[in-house]
Image (cartoon, rainbow over all chains, first blue to last red; front, side, top):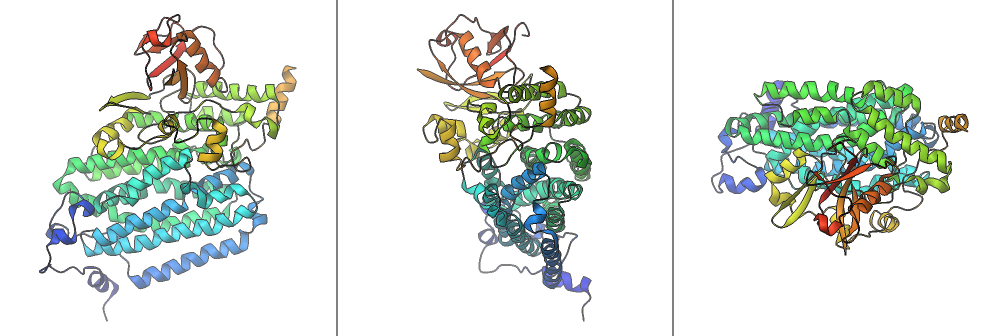
Length: 497
Length: 81
C-alpha cells in the first residue's frame, strides 16, 4: 500500500514522450502561451497543495455541507431582511459581479487543464475548474432566490448579459483574463495576481466585514470559496518560476498589467462595500488598510522572492489608494440610476471617519458630499425627487479599463486624450494608456460606451440609455437607500432655517 | 454642428461628455460644463477654460479655439494656471 506522499506523484505525473505527434501540435503556443518550451523544461513543475481526486471530493463535500447548514439555519428571507439596508446593497454588488465571473474562471481553468504544460499543472487546473463551477453555483443559489423579495437581485444572473457600463468594464476584464487567455497568461494573471492577491481582499477582508455586519451566510460563502482559491492559486507560482528563467521581462509585464487591471476592478468591488456600504460601527478597517494588509505587503514580498521589481507605476498606485474609490463612489452616487443597487450619502460621522482614514485628499471629497447634501436639502427628501439629485450629462469612460474617467483627484483628473492611426482614445490614467500601447491590436477595436452613444448604437438620452441599453427599470435602477431622508440632513436644515 | 468633447471641471470626480456648438463661446462652453457638474461641484464665477495646456480667451468661439471632436478641455478656478 502506497503512502499518500508516494501516491500523489504517481497519480499526478502522467505525461509520456509523444512519438506520433509533435509536442507543439499537442500544445500550440497560441493557446499554451509564451514562451513555448519543450516539456523537459516543465517536467519538475510542482505546487504545494497537492491533492488527490478522493481527497478533493471529500473536502468539497464537507465544505458544501457547511455552507448548506448555515443557509438552512440562518439563510431564510427573514434573516436576510434583518441586515442593514446599506450592507444589503453591498450584497447586490457581489451577487451580480461574482457568479458568472467565476464561470469564466471555469473556462480559463479548463484551458490550463488542457493546455498546461505538465500533467500536475493540468490536474490542479481540472480541480480548479470544478472549484470555479462551485463558486458560480453557490452565490446563485444564495442570492438569486432573493429576487422574489427584491427585484434588484435579478442582477445576480442578469448583470453580464446587459450593456450596463459596469458590466461592459467587467466583461472587458474577464473576457481577456479568463475566457480568451492562453494557459501561461491565465496562470500568471488569474492564478498568481488575481487569486493570490486580490481575492484575499474580497474573500478574507470582506468575510470579516460580513461577520461584523452579522451576515453569516455571506461570511460562510466567501470563506468557503477562499479555501478553494488558496489551493488552485498555487498553480501560478511554479508557472511563473519557469517562465522567469526564459523571459523575465515578459513576466514583469504580465504582473504589472494584471496587477493594475485587478486593482481597478477590485477597488470598486471591495472599496465601495468597505468604506461606504458597511455601517460605520462595523468597519474594522478602511479599504486602504485592507489593501495594505492583504495585498501590498504580501505582493511585494512575492515580487522580491522572484527577483522582480515593483511595477513602474507604484507611486501612482499608492496615491490612488487614498482617492480612487472615493472618486468612483461619489460619481456613482450621482449616477446611481445607471446601476442596479442603492447608495447612501456618508453621514457627518462617516465623513469624519473617512477624513481620519484618508486625510490626503478628503477636503476635496468632502466638498463634493456637501454639494450633494445641499441639493437634497434644497429639493427635499422623497422617492419622487430622486432624479432631481442626479447627474444628467453623460459620464465618460476609459478606453482601456472601461471605468469612469475618475482617476487622479478632484483638482487634477489624470485622464489622457490620445490619437493613434486616425482614431482618438482617452485613458483614465497613465498605466491604462501604457497597457493599451503594449497591446493595441488587442484593445484598439473595442468601442467604449461614449463611442457607442455617438455612433447611435446606444441611446443618447439618459432615460433611454438606462431602460433600453442598460436593461434597468424604474424598479431596479439604483436609488438613495433613504431617498434623501437622513436625520442628520433634516437636523442641519432645521438649524439653518 | 455639435462637437462632442471630454470636459473636466476642477473639483469634480468624473469627466463628462459635453456637446459644444461651433459658434458658441468658450465661456458658454465652460458654463455648460459647470451646469452639468453642479450636482457635485458648487458654481464658481471666476473660471478659465484650459485647452492644450493654455487658458483660452473666453470670447473666442469653440471653432476659433480649435476644439475638435473627442478633445479634452478643463475648466479651472481662475488664475490657477
